[in-house]
Length: 253
Image (cartoon, rainbow, N blue to C red; front, side, top):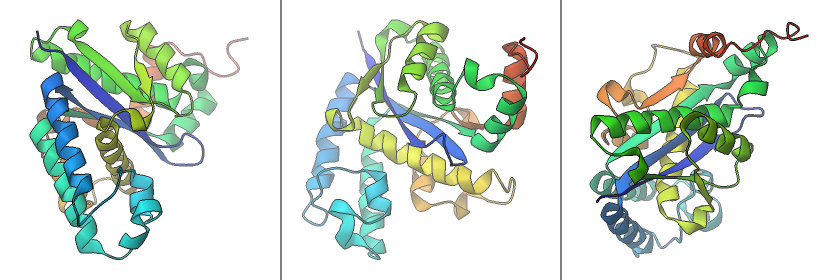
């Protein structure tokens, strides 16, 4: 029997930013073993020599990456090498984002935040896509374990939502407990950055205008026409409020 694990990480924050993204990769046990070995080999290479990838420190050239500032060839070579490991070792990718200005607008109209918070919405959406993918491939739901990086605001509400909606109990781990979270962090960050750019100006950007890491990551299976990557905007959120029969503010009394 083959068992699968998916590791999710989040990028963005529900307070003060425009996008929150949850993303991750699924693979079987043997693939993850090979992934960890290959990933650590890249980190340990003499031309890189870092202990971990964290996109916040990498993109701001701080911490272990403080000497990489303005060294674009080295930075691109590093991410390309890591993404090559992901392409070789994972089975599928999933990403769910939410446009927070639309969420805040509808939260003023509906009691939306009382029903679901952005992290729980994105996490549940991504897990829903994992479950649909598993059905397409005849993988029993009981053979999939769900891991989320610990430390995000509202993680307990995410946990409650997944139990209520799907009857699953996700496992929350620190990023240091699995290198798979580093790959999830990379995908979540690139989703966050891309949607920050695209959503306010729909239809004006092609993939070739996106960051190079995203152009590489999109070649990893993510559903037909990227159906397992997506962002929820105002129309989808309003439909959610209606389907869930979320009360209008002021109407509950």
